[in-house]
Amino acid sequence: MTKQKTKKQIKQTKYIFVVGGVMSGVGKGIATSSIGKILQAKGFRVTALKIDPYINVDAGTMNPTEHGEVFVLKDGYETDQDMGNYERFLNIELTRENYMTTGAVYKTVIEKERNLEYGGRCVQVVPHIPLEVIGRIKRAAAMADADVVIVEIGGTVGEYENILFLEAIRMLKSEQPKDVITAIVSYVPTPSKVGEMKTKPTQHAVRTLNGTGIQPDIIIARADRPLDEKRKEKLAVFCNVQKEDVISAPDVESIYDVPVNFEKDHLSEILMRKLGLKTKKALGLGEWEKRVRRIKSADQSVKIGIVGKYFKTGDFVLSDAYISVIEALKHAACEVGRRTELHWIDSTDFEGDTRALRTLKKYDGIIIPGGFGSRGIEGKINAIRFCRENKIPYFGLCYGMQLAVIEYARNVVGLTGAHTTEVNQKAEHKVVDIMPEQKENLRKKNYGATMRLGQYEACIVRKTMAAKAYGFGSVLERHRHRYEVNPEYVDQLKSAGMIFSATSPDGILMEIAELPQSVHPFFLATQFHPEFQSSLLYPHPLFVAFLEACKKQK
Ligand code: GLN
Image 1 (tube, rainbow, N blue to C red):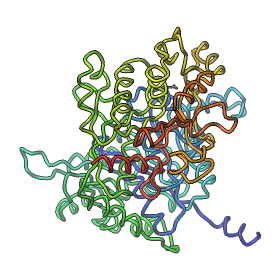
Image 2: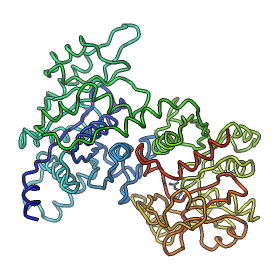
Image 3: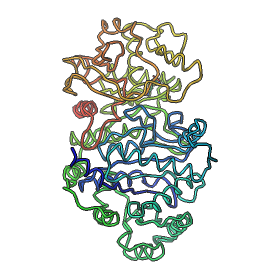
Image 4: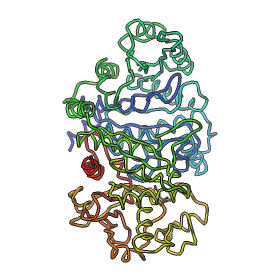
């Protein structure tokens, strides 16, 4: 006991900040996750934090086409998709302590001021906001008992929005100079007309960072190709770092390659040296590398159609809204030795002219992921019916489960007026309906963080597909929804052949719906979001079962 305590006291947590240069969207989240992975492989306890500079208190109220997927933590906090990357790479469970936005930080500071927690002093943007940020980072570090904390700051340097977070880095560094380093993930373009890799944008980004009082220790140079020696030298000379501190981060086939690539430039050793970290019992990247090789060597593919609606942003097609689903499919595909070939299908295609439904036959399996509202709903229901009647493997996630139940109620039970009250409050058969406490939230226009959120237990019914896949009697899965299968219709649905293979422990809430394998090769849908708990090293059993079924379609 005493011995343990002394050990704890001498442990000095180290901080690695990751900031963006030149432009966003070049993989800062993956870089952060990969830094964590390589340090974990060296035996360190790692945790990661994301800071988003927007005013929204959490990501829950944001439209997925604006900000990509909302990732739900086990404690129900609605966060940014990068949190999903951290969990998937590091196999750790993060909590609300690991995520903050400008809105959340200001909210706390204002609340503290109102509670007189600043003892009557003048509460100022500087230093009180950065101090609150530092306090939160340290709290997350302590909760995880971390050796190393990696903090990713959203956006890029030079944006007004993140200046207070950069100030937090500067303040923490001046307080603990030996424990804090900063890495800038910057883009190094090769314009086609120039035909040469240009370092100037990164040089400017580093100068901008210098202007906030921060000198980066590491430059992670994202580019479409590896950096040559000359470019490394240039960046080193003009950005004030050593040449070996410039890490080449070219585009890769799989994001799971990134940690392996970082190690080609010895990044973990560089980080350890800079932070004065002594080697621990290294675990290595063995199993990880084995799986990355397996992803690349799979030559046969399974063709999956994802029927949804959050695909378009201006002229671009965006799959970010479903990032956890995509990754969970990749993990499961690696497990079953296949590649995934994903196709994005807009559900409105199946409304009106239902001949388009026949195109679904091209796929080995169909997924309908989570969603909200009424647009494209009838198209989704038509697609589910087609999959059910034509024995195409179907996997529904959250809304994809509620709609599968509605489809079954309408077309098998014969309740033509079946619907969810989310779409039609006056539906004749409210087969999917709102929970009483949620009614109150909607009435008060209380939309933020008020759904059924986070981890809940689901009890699995024996001798079902779910039981076969999980092999456990009860599981913890993450939720994000307001509506539920209405218990009043459960018996009718069951008598018509639908199996509810998992329920809440009190048996009231339906967690998984499936059809017997004697009538359909794979028809299973979950009220929860299994995709939030899949990782490369631990693929989710239901995704694996789905892909096994898709594989057999070939
Ligand atoms: N819109 C549905 C609900 O709120 C489903 C939500 C989801 O798919 N995440 O219950």
